[in-house]
Each structure stands twice: as C-alpha cells, then as structure tokens.
View 1 (cartoon, one colour):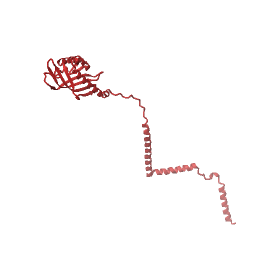
View 2 (view 1 turned 60 degrees about the vertical axis):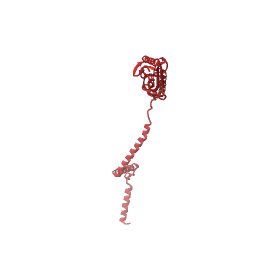
View 3 (view 1 turned 135 degrees about the vertical axis):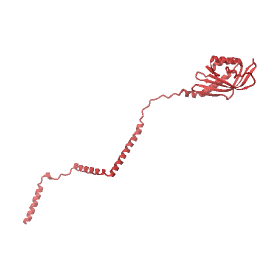
Length: 255
C-alpha cells in the first residue's frame, strides 16, 4: 500500500470517529405541532394584511357589512309583529246607553200618530153641544197655554172658551181628509200639527151663521204622562155665505 493512500484513509476514519462522538445536544431540533401552527398563523396574518390592502378586499368588506345590516333588519322585522301582538288587556266597559235624543227620534212615529188623534178629538169637542166643550177643555190643555199669541193659565183659557160658546152656541168643525201635517222635535219633546178644517157656527137667537175653511195649528207636548196642547192658533182661509161675523175671525180668544 502506498503511503499517500494510507494517509487519506486515516483522515477519513478520524473524521467519521469525530462525527460519531459528537454530543446528543448538538442534534437538530425537530419541529413540533405548536411551532408549525405559529409559523402558519404568522404566514396567514401576513397574507391577510397584504390582502386587506387590495381594492378587492375593500369591496368585500362593504358587501359583508351590507349583508350583516340586512340580516339584522330582517331579524328586527320578524320580531316586530311578535311585539305588536302583545297588547295589554282592556278593562270591560259597559255598553253605552242610547241618548235621550236618539230614543225620542225613535218615538217620532208614535208621537205623530198620538198628536193627530188628539187634534181630531179636539175638533170633535169643539163641535159638542152646549157647555160640553168647556167642561172637557182641561183634558186637552196644559196648565199654561200660548193661545193666539197670549200666554194664559188654564183657568183663563177656560173663561175664553166659555165666552166663545155663548157667542156661537151651535158649532160644527170637521177636518178635511189628508190635510193634516205633523212635525216633531226631540229637544222640546213636542209635535206641531197643522190641519185644515171646514167650520160652521150658528147663533139662532141672533139669526147669524158663519162658515168657511180655516187652518188650525196646535203644539202638543209629550213631556208629561200624556200629550197636552201647549199652544194654539188658527186663521180663516175662506168664508162661505153671508153673516156679520166669522166664528174664527171674531172668536180668536175662544175657538
């Protein structure tokens, strides 16, 4: 063997021995999972930071913000009807009663019919013979009456009726068919009746007669237990035949 070759072989063996005798602490450290994760997070953060600086990233942020806002509004919209359905319970209230005016309006047909009947009976009473007209007067009138423009007590009105009977002891009053009109008022609880009637009044002792057509207006109150006349007036529309007096025109205080 050549000396140079032996020398090279010896150096090689020396190097291998030195390498095999190196301490274990100088061995390379293997990567652990925690180390790998930290390196990956660092790399991702760097990538995200780089991506955040691009225009596309800004656009994505705006789109994501709008989507989040719509989802929040949708949740609030779904919750709103639920809140609306929760109402406090109201206390039971009694059924309102009909007002007096409404109740009176409902009675108008009844009042009108009663007022018309009273007017017919009044004309029949005026036609009664003798003092029957005076005796029955309190059945028709209230305690105070507006009589041909004057306000009279019932006693004063009866005195007027008595004078009228003496002037015209024979009388015949009859309503014309279909000539009666009635209007009622709830506030005053009254009905006003307008009727046209034929009349004839005689005084045999004086030999005079008055006849014609007149219009009678009565105001009838329903405020009490029964309907009563509270106002009366009349006027002559036509006269027939000759006579020095008219039963209505000259007896405004008694007819």
